[in-house]
Amino acid sequence: MSFLATHNNAFTNSSMNNNKLLKTEYSAVRLDKNIATSIDMMWLDELGLSQEDKALIKSVLYYICVERQTSLFGYGSIDPAHFAKVMEYPEGYLRKPHVNPIQLRYLSEEEKKIRKENEKNHPEKKVMDSLLENAIYVLHSQTMQLRQGAKEIVFDEYGMAPKYTTLSNSYIFLPELKVTTIKKKGGLKIMYEYQVDQRFTTNLSLYFLRFSRDAVIALRRSGNDDLYLHLKEMKDALFAKKQKREDYDRSQNFEFLCKKAQIPFFKRNGDPKDNREVKRELNNVLALINEKTELKFVVKWKKKRETSRWEYEPHFYFTEVETFDSTNPVVKWRVSSEKKIEKALIFKENLLHELLNTYRRYNDTSEIKEGIENLFYLWLVSNRNKNEKGLAFQNAQIFTFGALHKDIDDMTKDWLSSLECLPKLEDIIKKWEQYIEKDERRREKIKGTLN
Image 1 (cartoon, rainbow, N blue to C red):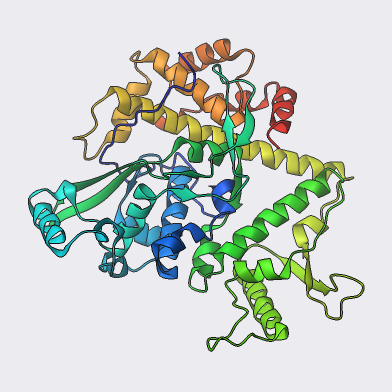
Image 2: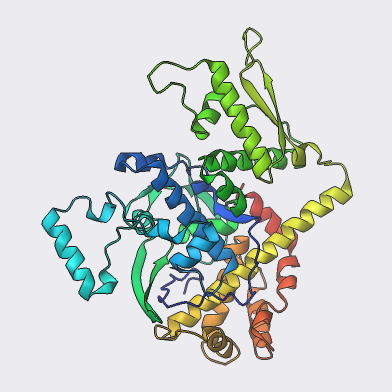
């Protein structure tokens, strides 16, 4: 059986309590780099969706990333109230009817009426016609178009020798979506349960860009979260080159940055703007990003060519990049240590989700309203599904490091034995430190194939 056995996640009414098993802060959330570079979502323009729609669709994407990394039992479902709290939207706004929802767009008035009547008797067949529902439905029904050159990680049958291949530039982000209703005091609570494409979750471990939830929320209203993510990617690329002592170019294309910042080159009456005016607007946006986010940089404007008359080529100097000393062993050790800590957190996250997926696959959790944490713990320390737990451990290894350790069988046996004396749920990752440290050079070599 392949270590990358297909996940057949059973949907469940999930508790929002993450039991402090995963990280609880939002300062460095990971996003699939393919999506980060395509976050302007120009493919949605063909559907006639507004900038408001795009902002909400992106917020759903960001929210799913946050949930994957902070909430074990909440990941896999969207509770509108929790979404509103995490992404800082008024609940009333999310419930507003969409003027032209995708699900109803091509139906006649009679067909729409039938759908709405059917919804009354069958809540699970709910019409997705609110602002939030339309955003979720777009990600479920429309093929996401990625930038040319998007990459996908593939493994061989045994989870070895991972490599990047060119990804077909499209896929459905939420291949499975189910609406459920929960009876609560005061009425019914609607939940949207989903499954994310596996390519996305794999990239969250091996091909990702870090972003700050607070930053994208602060820039959402002005529409500058796209530019923020681009600058994050640029800073990371420059930092990687600085670490390797390679030459790097700080310059950026003026027109490209203006497009990312949604700054038009024409006035509303159709007349072209003076480039000096556009430059001022871009400088204002860059100043806003400097003020509202963790990115700290200086922009120096230079002539693109010696023969150029004006300075319209921005050069970026990021504080973190410019102050990094690649010759200082203490600084190099600190960066290396931070990477190991991040890998440890990713492994912990992947292992917990793999184990919970396994538990749900072999246990009917559809009627569990609360207390799933304790049931999950009792299953872990039992002798049930021991082989499947071992497979979950190995899957987590692959998704985190891109390969299995040469002693994986002994490691799996050792780890399974440790579950028998697990004192509490928080100790699932007992001995995970040794799995991060072992054979580090081999993993670094493999990692090099993924760059």
